[in-house]
Image (cartoon, rainbow, N blue to C red; front, side, top):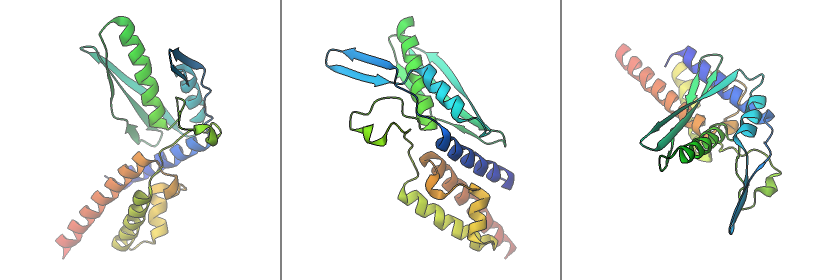
Length: 208
């Protein structure tokens, strides 16, 4: 991956962090009540509205791929940044009876699930006590091991390139801190830097 692509990825991470700061958790206007099962959820239209409001001024845009084959509904969410980087979620797949009504319901659910997990916005009531979070959106942040590994990789890249570690980190993340990275973005960044370090090591060996 080129330096320009790495910078684009850093800009994407900064834009996503900005989105996380300004997005407002949508209200749970959908209700399910069947026998002993009762829960509230965010309707797709309200989730879309919240995300579209949250990405204003971030340079982000998104779309969803959908397909149906043999009764299986598949959806993935793709997020773009103006600097060129894009993130593609994994496919969310739901098996249905193949009937039009079942397919339609599954498609709505899959779109909502894929969109909410990609942007980290909670779309269903958590029965384990999420009220303590005052309705704030839930994000899967980079864990301790990921943060520690990224710090080590930034230091290793600094030694390899002869640049200060803080400048190396800023080149990848911009103003975003390691702790503010999402889990999936941290994984992508770890893979990127590892590949770049391997290439730099090979080049250094060739010159020697």
